[in-house]
Image 1 (spheres, one colour):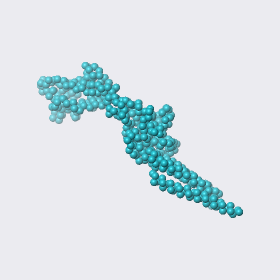
Image 2: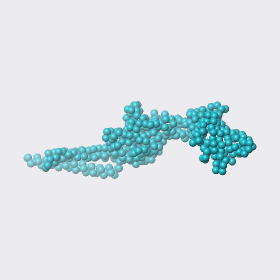
Image 3: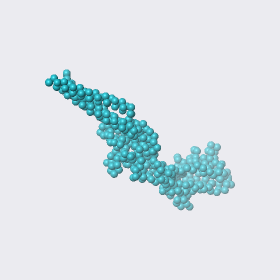
Image 4: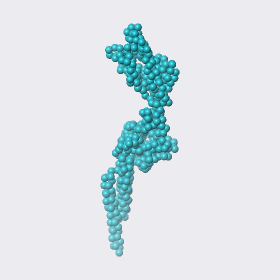
Length: 434
C-alpha cells in the first residue's frame, strides 16, 4: 500500500506541476497582451483515511484560476475610445451574437480594457469582436433610471445613429450696456436695436431682434427702458414678449438692474433673473439680471455696447470624435464644437473576481462562484473611474514567472525522482524473489 500510494503521489505531482507549467507558459506568452489577467495554480493535498502506525500518500490536486480583479498599469494611447478602468470593476461587453438578440437574452461579458473603434455598422467594438454595452441617453443627453442588477437596460453602443446633431438655443445672457444719457430729460428717445442670432430645433440660424426704447421724462432722469422682442422666425412685426426695466442710480447700485416687469407673453423669474419668451422654435430664457446683484444688463454713462452676449445651442454639425469622461459618459463631439452625451457606460462589480469564468479575448463571464454582478456609475461606490486614451497592460510579471518556472522545474524533477525511486525499490523486491 505504501509503495503504490507513493507511486500515485509522484504521478499526481508530475501532473499538477505540468498544469502549473501550462499557466506559467500562458502568462509569459501574454505578457504583452493588453487587459490580460495572470493565470495561477494553487495546490491542495488529497488526504486518504489514516490509521495509527500507517500512512498512505493521497497525492495532490491543482486548482487553477485567473486574477481577474488585479489592476494592470495604464498606458496612454492616441485613441479616445481606448477605454480602461482606474480601480475596481469591469466594462460590460457582448459578442456578435448579442447584436441580434433581445436585451433580456443578450449575453454579457466583462473586460477591464478595450481598444474600441466603430465597425461598418457603427457599433463600437474591439478587433477581437467584443462590443461595448451602455445605457442610451435621450436627445437632451440625459440617462434615465436603469436596472442595476440586470442587462435589460444595456444595449450595444452604436455611434452612427448620432452622425448629425443640432442643439436649439434655450438661454441667452445679455452682456450689454444701455447709455444712461438716453433716459434723461431732453434726450431723443430713439430706440436702440439689438439683433441676436439663435438656433432653432432643426439647427437653423434664426434672429431675435430686441428693441430698447428709453423712457424720456419731463424732468431729470427716468433710468427706465421699454424692451420689445421680435422673432424673425415667426411674425417679425408682432413682439413675442415685452418687459420694462429700471436701473439703480444710487451710489452703491452702479447702474445695475433695479426692477423688471414682463408683459406681452413674457414672464420674469426674479430668482434666475431671466425673462422667458415663447419663440417660434420653443422657450428661450434671456438673462437680464436681478435687483441687488451684479447684472449682465447695465445702464452706465457709456455708449450702447453689446460686448459680451452669450448663448447656448449650436447649428447642425457632423460627428467629429468620441470621448469618455471619468464618470462613464460617452460624448459625441461635433465639428461645430457642440458636445452631447449619447451613452453612459456603467462599471460592473462582483463579490469574487477570482470566480469569474474566462471566456477568451480578455473577457470574463459571471459564475456561481463569482456571485451576481451589480452595475455602478463610474467613480461611485466601490468601483473606479473610466479613463479614455488608455489601455491596461498585462498583469504578468516576467521576473516572477521565470522564478516560478525554475521552482516548477525543480518540483517536476523531484516528483520524477520519486517515481524512479519507487521503481528501484520494486525492482529490489523482484530480485529478492529471484
